[in-house]
Image (cartoon, rainbow, N blue to C red):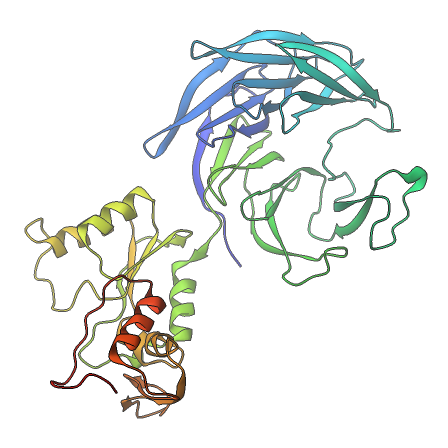
Amino acid sequence: MGTLELKQKLSGHRGRVWSVCWHPKGANLASCGEDKTIIIWGSEGLKWVTKMILTEGHSRTIRELAWSPCGNYIASASFDATTAIWDKKSGQFECNATLEGHENEVKSVNWSISGQLLATCSRDKSVWVWEVNDDEYECAAVINAHTQDVKKIASCSDDKTVKIWREYKPGNETGVATPNNEPVWKCICTLSGYHTRTIYDIDWCKSTGLLVTACGDDIIRVFKEDDDCDPHQPSFTMVCSMDSAHTQDVNCVQWNPVVPGQLASSSMMSSNKAESPVGMSLKEVVNAIRKFADTSLAASWDNVGLLIEPTQPKIVSCILLTNDLTEDVMDEAIQLKTDLIITYHPLIFAPLKSITTNSWKERIVARCLENKIAVFSPHTSFDSVKGGVNDWLAEAFEIESSKPIQPDGNNVTYGMGRLCTLKNRISIDEAVNLVKQRTNLKHVRLARARGTGEF
């Protein structure tokens, strides 16, 4: 099972923090809470810091926030029964509109994809839909379809379950009835048995499809839809969880819309947490590679396996693949915040007597350790294994038969090189072109016996 790693704890609010919301571009994070303020956070290097504090928009607790799709507006829902609209002008946010009409606490707010509609829901059991036109907000509809106070448009509940809903339109192929010839929403899956207290929030990750829940038991859980399941009766598996994510109830969770797997959460306590991407431990990744091709398959002269390992336990969420680990590749790995570099050719062959800045290899090793980046090299173990590099390259040709040139002593299907018998004779030029197509390379290097033109 994967894990969640705490990236940073953000402190700035007084009292409980009710909601966090990512900017559409993922570069900023907004939070709100009991202290009636909105804090805009931004990253500086590896740290998140306060960029702006918005005040005087509400007289009571701010329950939830929503960035507009364009990122220039923030809507805030409050227990004072109003929704405030904050407009970014000259680099600063100002409250330019206050939406009134609900009879009780406004619990949730959200924008339409176009940004031309805004929905609010309240403890007064109603949902209001507002139309946006040139910074003017007019109520377009009031929906009174609920018999209890509306806490959230998403389907999480006090009954400790999460419900997945699907829309069925008239004439749908599954035969679901649509009264009055209107679309209906049907519950197609219920997640139960995972949570011991109220589920306060859920959020889908658009880039990964993962579902995260925030619960009163102080645990953040992440679910993944099972592969090959019936889309009309889906099943989900919990892929990771974080116990004691906060010291009190987790009120809100939201995925970063740009960085896959990164999420933010808020709690009853006066701080937020930014969680790092969901991933696997370094040990799990290395074991998975060795399961495909054990390092014992490598040539005796080779140096394969885990060559550089950070001293602290490592969660791997970003892997960079390369043929050779050069200083340019190292620059890219650091820029991408890579956790593990898998380099086909080993960086280290001969023992290093020192790690200084005098040679490029020593500089790379030092930078890997400084940035906590692990390095693994499979090299000839991937050449030897059945289904490895040699077999992959041989698939460029129509092969009658294939066997290792130097078979492994324990398994004759493993070994170095491949001796292939082709179904039909081809020219060297044809062979070269097939290799180019297979490798997607413009140029390859060929060695052949003198005086031969075909084989």
